[in-house]
Image 1 (cartoon, helix red, strand yellow):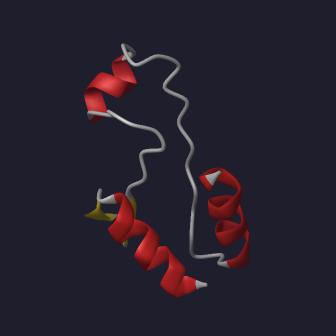
Image 2: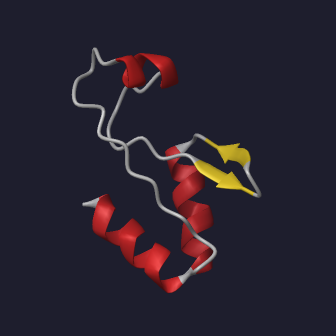
Image 3: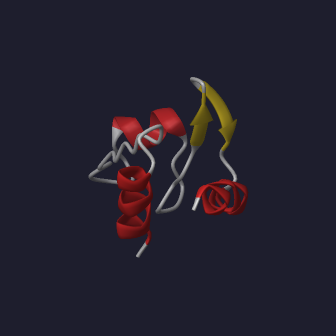
Length: 66
């Protein structure tokens, strides 16, 4: 599971903020608005700017923080 790993990373690094959004359904407004097609969907923002939506790239970047 990815959630516990991300939660541990956020606890370890005070500059990392984790936001979890429960879409509830694939047909929800949130899923449609953000184009969520798979779970988990992981996006990384740095300094308020979207850095990447690519899951492998995001996890690679997060791994460098550990």
